[in-house]
Image 1 (cartoon, one colour):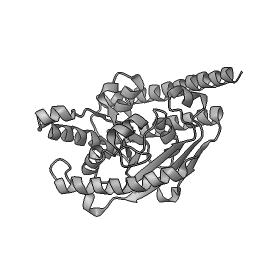
Image 2 (cartoon, rainbow, N blue to C red; image 1 turned 90 degrees about the vertical axis):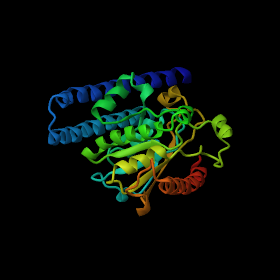
Image 3 (tube, rainbow, N blue to C red; image 1 turned 180 degrees about the horizontal axis):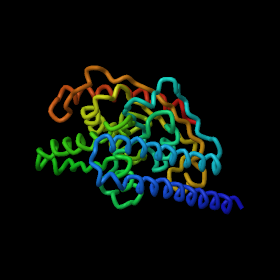
Image 4 (cartoon, rainbow, N blue to C red; image 1 turned 135 degrees about the horizontal axis):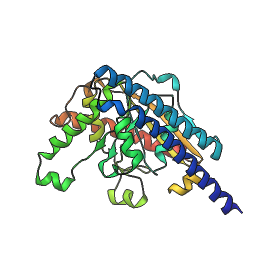
Length: 295
């Protein structure tokens, strides 16, 4: 009986979320049709703001679905008075499951500007991902492999220029530029292979965030999310059935040090070292925080 109930919850949750996303992105697709034929900057800024408004409403709809199907089980530990929806932020989080996206979007909903994720170019064929790129200015990132860069070092600058170009779209209206600092989902195997010095985290990769900060001078603060699930399961079905519903999220805000502003990540070695050191300092405390947050 419990298996049947769990399966029904998972199926209904899946259908409701798909319907909500289809309505949201369908609306975004329609209202963004004029973007291709009206090149006026003021119009594009207004359209970006309206698109973010629809994006926030869509996330709120997903939030209501999760409340209806799973209950109010996300515990957010934060001081919302520190946040301002009229400002630009950079945000990061630990990464454990594809469900993290929903948990983070819901947690940030109407607290800060809509989260804008850097998305892998390989995912362009997924309809919702493609529409997020076109209507919500969530950029695709196509970084070359370490091996390719070793063969042709000029690719570093090409990757940097592409990221800078993508980030410029965020300047149209207040946004929260989000990145999974670990670059991949945490698993015990990856943790062991890396030889990570952290108990609960993989080694952070800072290139994307540092480049975004180079491109957007408006960013004054970094928001760090530490996500801890009670369940050991991490697959999508477990999220839909509610087995991963008990979550603690610690939200911390860090002011961007002045020495890290207005720098060029591609050719400033000192900036790269300073940024890496700053994130690693946060990562040490984050590892401690996650240990304390565990159920």
